[in-house]
Length: 373
Image: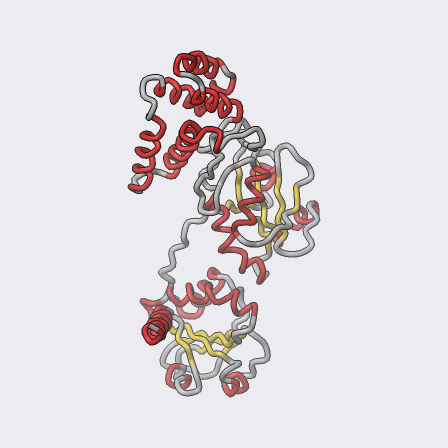
């Protein structure tokens, strides 16, 4: 088994190496690749360098964007910590350092542009005329500007989490993938909002270097600074929890009064209404002859005027004819969700119905006086 594991690990490592479009250079192949026959962009990096780690996914995406231009352009890298002779040869004194070797020359030019994809694209286009095949993936993070901040945040009537960042900030770049996941997890609000507070939960960011007045107004002194803006609270609340997905989701659920899990699905409390939960327990524990009266009580309850309040009443009415309706309906809805043929909004709707049905199936096991909904 250990041998199989070692083989599997080796194959996995090989697969990762093949998957990369960045050409790895060493003293053995450097002059064969950088021979003047092509344009070559070389990153000199060190494995322990934080800025290099932040650049890595961007650099990989850059290389993948020019795979159709392999005959005229190479995106490459050198581990200058492991191959110090190459670092010394080109006077590398810090990491990452990027050098441009134009076609027809072996003498490099310093790359001193930005470290984001758009800057690399523009640089290569200016030098070679080549256009990338990159298609920007959709983002769930709302991009703010100095011109839109007041309308989209302060006057929006929504809960808005704002990351104040700088394009050159390594910590901001490291946070970006997680922040995108946070935005995706809350992208379907308020479609499944089950509270009486119908404020959206928006995840946004602002390049603070383009809006210095706004950054100063809210005390932004370092990057990233993250603050939650609420329609009910002023000033905004500083986000001080961890930079992991679960911490962000926990924070937003508290401040937006939402019930999201980290994968974007709804948790077991979503959609439930405390007053009707208690009536549901009272209904299932009552003698059959007393249930119609409780169903009528639920129907006239103020909460029953909401969409999911009415669903409590519907379940009671169906149970008057079929005691096993909640369990059967839960199974039916779960089957639809598992089929994968539902929209995110419909999946949320089914999840809320499932939560309500669960109250009728399990009663006081899921409801008590201390249950915070």
